[in-house]
Length: 65
Image (cartoon, rainbow, N blue to C red):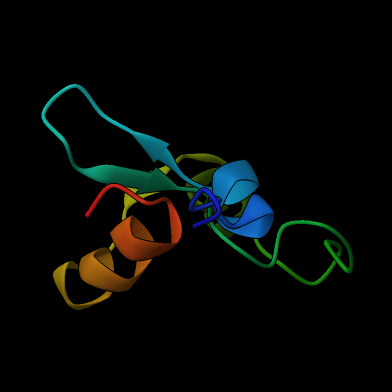
């Protein structure tokens, strides 16, 4: 039986916190920034946590479950 491999795309996009939650970055910050307000761009800079309903599928992709 071969080893279970993690999904490379998930490995690059998500990190675990110390308490076991999953961190992610915001989308829509790569281009066409002139029409976005300074407040919106600053908010998109910070990381946030993955929604609870998505946690199980991401943990499965990272082979944590």
